Image (cartoon, rainbow, N blue to C red):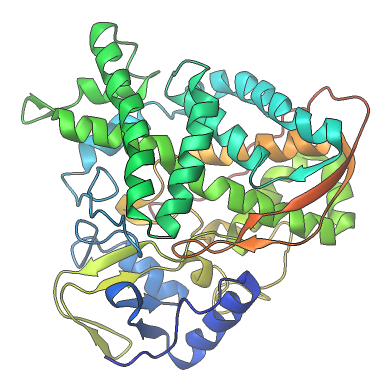
Length: 410
């Protein structure tokens, strides 16, 4: 089949969003032969409808374009309902508000420590430095891993993500095996000494039953292996894009620094404007018509949340940051439907803490090139050099209230 557009031609976010704007008007269901061939839905309503229809658009064949070069399938991302439900239920059990509130002081302290090298030198790369180190601590705390795992996870996951984007199967396998070792050891230790299921993902997974039977070791370890890396992909990109925006809008930077209570609302608009995903995908389980175009069985269909979040039919002046945008809760930054991001509450809190602590610890920061850009399946900045002026009194930010977001399952 002939390409409608080269959907992977330019990784520069500005160019990518310009292409999506053109596609929304001229070819809202576009085809590309890259990565074996896939379709892309670019209008908000179509992306949301596909995400909410797991019977027609399944996840068990291709959940990401490009997919893992080794073709592995791990729960819950690569499982369809109801097979994925026990895994999501077990993980969600450990992400309730009461537990997140208990985790917050430790995460704030980790953020302050991870920022210290940047503050002491006055310069660094926010995406490859703090943007990798702090999420590793978030994952370590959530999974109740030993502290020495965090720097190891940061280095390993960064290498894995880079190799995956470049479709380097050998390095992907090597780095993945390191994370499998962490997951296997975690399962072994929780079998010996389980923790309360509301406090510990591994213990919660071990307690799950399907028709009275425990989860298989393969799937249990695979779920934890996926949990080790899933929270490491988007935060560096989102944080880098956010800081570049605030570098160019110093009035907004100063306003958020003066009034941290505005940060949660700002984060929701940053999530809309700089959603880092363009390659999350489903596969058609039957011939499916979308806007007059028939998508054949077995062909991946990407749901570019980055494109949907800038659809002018839903978001007025979509390329502009608007603090307090009335319908910002409609954004698809975390997806929708049964495969929406299971770690959404933790991710939102971690992003808030990162921005709170950075603003509290500085009087000013500015990003500068050269920037590097994410390849499929993400879109955004993966290297963001920054200079900072430390405030001189680094005590951390006061807690801002969580921003109310509509139930993402609606």
